[in-house]
Length: 114
Image (cartoon, rainbow, N blue to C red; front, side, top):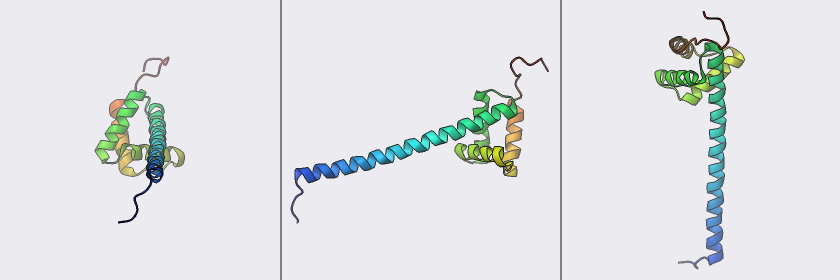
């Protein structure tokens, strides 16, 4: 058995572990914030395209995610790509249109009744 580490060495080891833990936590928080931004932007697209409320936009993303078995963040990313490039997988587009039809359109504030 080798020599026991000094108290200073043990403390430094714990500090290194803590630094690693904090770096990992910061990375997870960055990913969460990025994910939140992607989802919020996709909700905004649903609001604009579907003339629905933000709460309904959230419900649309959830339903599309559940019905296609694709993570909600990934559905949101596909919607943002669609907004930028005009491309979206046919099955996602079909599901999105179906769900949007069920949720909207809502009346736009200040618009004459349809």
